[in-house]
Length: 372
Picture: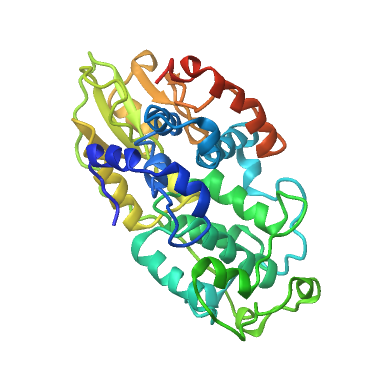
């Protein structure tokens, strides 16, 4: 379902219709890009996508929704950088009305009785992809109708997502649940019918919006399940590192084929078990990452901790290079900045405060593209 060849991925970038995206992105058959797995894995950057889009001649004002959607991903990442492990807990306030720390079994089993949701979950298990609007519906069902604390269902979704980005995922779930926002997000059956092109009646969501305030946990969501997630990492084979050459460290969040392209260096994909113990992903997603890694000539896979890699191969700190990411705090060497869309950094209290500062740079395209 998802390409893994780099040149074909770039064609997908150039085939995006950003104007149509702004019109119909909330519909399950809307003109969404499906670029998120490649952005999340660091194969392409938000700035790279923005640059290629603007070079096609689009006026930034005409494609603001598209540019904002790209910027959301940077916004969540900047919060993760600033807050660190705090994003693993209720960020702004305790989640309102959380009743359990498990997850509705009906969501896991795709048996909520809401046809559009159940169909989407079954497809999600196959493809690793789910429409953003449906993600919000599922989060609302788990947290705001089922009473589950956001973290377990967020981990379930992240585990299966090909575009899994823990910052975007965790903070979006908190936003829906009211732990990272001023109110909870809810949607009724009419809303689902509109955006999923269904015509279902009689579900537990077939109610007016004012009824949500007094809604009890629906019986179909009362059955709860505890989930365990484990990442099946590949066996670490023998790797060969030339001590006279610099070593570039790639990981699950950085599989950029053009990073220091053409240089004579060691290129190592580091898969740390400690990272996947904390943020587990499925076998399907590890396989996807490994396939994307094939776009990087000479890439070798090392399964183990950063310290094991450097000790086993006598790597000097001065010779090690890696890209900026919150999960790289244990790396030692030269950290290089990521290819952010804008120069605006820091943790803003809302996306639109961030955006209102960042969008000023759209008037200075030379500044935007100077580091691409």
